[in-house]
Image 1 (cartoon, rainbow, N blue to C red):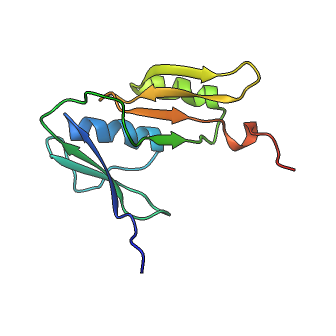
Image 2 (image 1 turned 90 degrees about the vertical axis):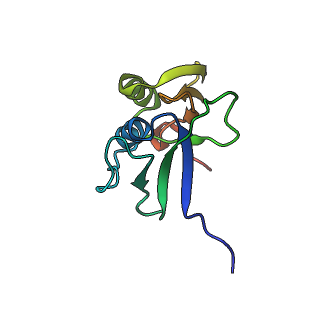
Length: 127
């Protein structure tokens, strides 16, 4: 029997604040028993299973992530990028093209990179 992913863990200096950002970004609630000051804070991944788990660590992020999230928004990509910027993300690399293809690479408040892809409505229909 194969393994299944139980949690996806993200290290950071402040687990609570990082979870608050991702809770708003993904529109999923922080675990109801979590509170500010906890060194582990989870967000349930309903429909997928497990949790997105934020864990406080003493060392800062120093290099590019080897694993990152690629988000496909329900709304237009550019509108989602703007929404995430207002939540506290920063633009790292703008790889959007004039023809509408491409993506934007953002960083969450701890500097973890993630991509925002085009929405399903913005993608060309497959033949």
